[in-house]
Image (cartoon, rainbow, N blue to C red):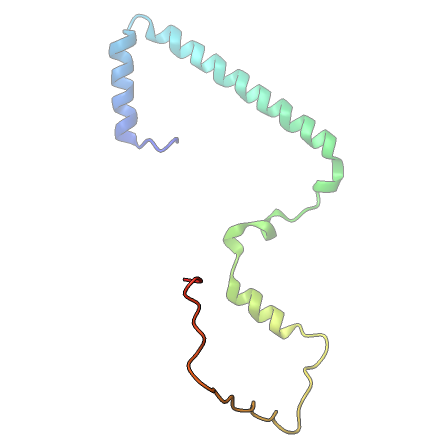
Length: 114
């Protein structure tokens, strides 16, 4: 919850009781509860409107396949390598080695490039 652990939450409650005072605290807690209820209502209405706008198209999507925690690069590479549609060409003889290069002097040096 917002990166606040239990001990910090208790400290915040104690500070709120001291600053607000025990006689006004129930009224503020009631206002906070009303705000949370209205916010939940807004979110529920927004979800209903989005579902109505999108319709059935998004209803049959398997969201678990799109979960980034399911990402395993080893499995993806393994499946890609095993799902070859066409067989790899086979060679009867290995390719010839590249011809050796002959240098006629020192390698060129460009002092403006560095």
